[in-house]
Length: 303
Figure (cartoon, rainbow, N blue to C red):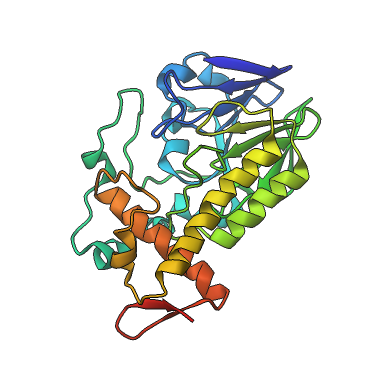
């Protein structure tokens, strides 16, 4: 389905809810017809002429944002400079996700995510490394002119190191990607996620003060945006405080994972892995603040 936000600016919404493996995308009908992100699903993209799209802008390299690339055969791909190697180098891909840590953290070999969670038919790729040649990259505050419409690439790290939003200043519209304002709070479970960066990125959005936010995994937002952003990041801060309190007693990463602070209704091995990766990122954040130390036996405690 297409939702018109302004002249020649549309949101492409999935047929169902915009939850993994789907996400909202944007379509800009201008001299350079452009798509932002590729996760709406083949059914949703049937509403536009995919062959006419000349430019695709990717917010970051997560599967639910890239799986529709085969629909846009005439489009050039651009992504953030920070993640450029992830699209062409499998080792970079594994490091980006933290999959090189799977066996040390999980104690068994990793099965592909698509083998554990079957995907719908209109998701046209499978999770895993795929070489996706980029025509170029963008960096923070780069202005991309599409004709009558211009947008600014806004570096919003924290979810991943090269996570970007796109701001249409004239229209006051920000595509915020996976700073998505969902009730469960942010996802920061990859190896390149960073809690300090995530907090700063949310503050950056508040400074931009968009009139409308288009998040990847929630409906379009136009009310109480600063308050929503505050609530969103408060979930992370509350988890961080809980982990700090738990470390009054020395605990391992496995011990902390059993409190299910991030995925309380854990359903599969990937959610256990992401739980451990999220806690690992909290520990990194606490280390930087000199609040936690690691003991020789793999335990962590408050300083």
